[in-house]
Image 1: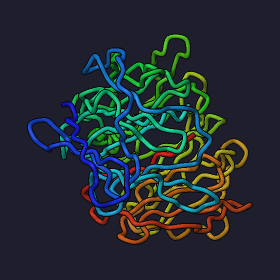
Image 2: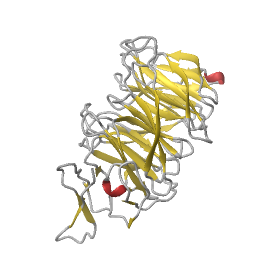
Image 3: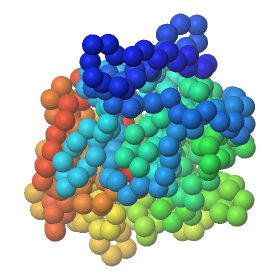
Image 4: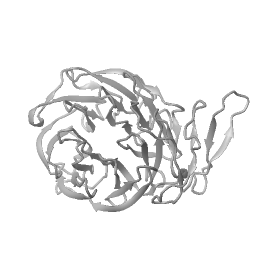
Length: 411
């Protein structure tokens, strides 16, 4: 479904920027800047692109490796189809050029490639046609639509991630309940389907609910969380790009879900899961180069139940944090020898109400959280010497829990 772009000049102003508009009709999606006169999705230089999964020609915007520290948030600032971009300079949250951006789709999942040159967004299949769209990223984090606005892949994707070598995008298909693989053209950002893999339900779990995907920083393996269906791990071949199934993680009960996963540089895996008694909350596994996971320990998080729905580990692999949905808190743990955890003094820390997503920034100095609030649903925290969190900035987010909340940060 291509984006049909109409350029209209702002009148009676000195602003020389263009507003991109598309008619929302018969397979078209609107894209426009919602604030200011910046260059969101500026018409890029037209060129012939390599064949993508749904088209043969496309356009590319400005790309380049950036050292800028920025992050994108969805379901924020009052619109379910909005994408908010912020630079995270010294812990502040400063809107990027023309942010927030209107996508015309409800974003379900996001991923940035390791080179920080491409952003991929999967639309929510339960609220709109499921597809994966691509954007080039400028060195200041401004996105420009790829492939003339056409989807790079048509798929009901619940979660996406990119391999540590930047060669492949993986997607959890919520309809077929398979793990899809696409090669990434590193020049154009276009996707080409190369196959799929089965996912497996835990023997003591409930229904499979595809939730998140994470690649180990080492590049050794991939972990897929499946809600009440548990989680799967797959070894990754850097030579062929192929996955090999390795482990099923059992949630322990049909009422327990595993909703998120973080992996540190030492191949320790941290899963966030919960049930009505807030147990176990956080589990720790050691992973080997083949993606086989071995349980190290379990830790309770939160106090009110339905606690841990998100998890992130700092870049130094010294602290791990869980976002506790019902409690509106973040639990913090110091990572010790063998992956053993010790609660950080002052934990749990206050978080946005209904916190559903966590991330770390590019510098490694800050943790980012998002929940639901018209004034402070997005929050940035500095990481203290003992792992304690201190709020450094807040921003507004949407208040409707119907729409997905996601954070993706530059690498």
